[in-house]
Image (cartoon, rainbow, N blue to C red):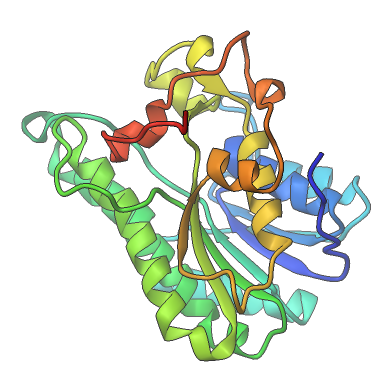
Length: 281
């Protein structure tokens, strides 16, 4: 079992918490005692797709912490700045910022309309940039401050069939790891995290990215975030980590509890951005 960090009294601002990985990160941090700012675009839902920022906030509060929901379009700088100020005003201090919100579409350049390219660029890399920038001054003065991104290591210079999505996701890591250097003097831990396998989310199912044999639950990602937060941000910064590698380093040698079906899924997600990725023998 992993040693869970005690996050009591801390506050996390997380983008894209209505469902999937973002929601699971919010719940995991709340379970560790962290207050949560739940953000996203969906404030009302008829169940398709399910989930709202308010529902996630309520589930976090049921775990015994304080939570606050803010409707947020990460593409708009004014809205992002206002959300950051509201979060700080409500809780007094934000210790953890997680850029999770993402748009996805996999297609050849020929088949990818310009507006879809723009959407992924604006939500993924621009959104992460705006959110990070809105909190920089605040994080400089916070003890145990973290800036994290749900994004892959930058290992490739081309991605046939998925150029637009890959460009935008690797851009999230590029911004985050660049900030590790810019904020080093202030002991802000800036890291990206990425699953080795595909994760069971609405997007994975909608786009048909494999089957249940290929997927793990979002808990493996939230456990990775908790493991990052158990470390010293002054020392653990500038890293682009894979979930399996970090958890293995933390003592996990059996990943079966995260699998949807029997047998470990192939490293589909890692190889999407790192074609030469191989698990250790």
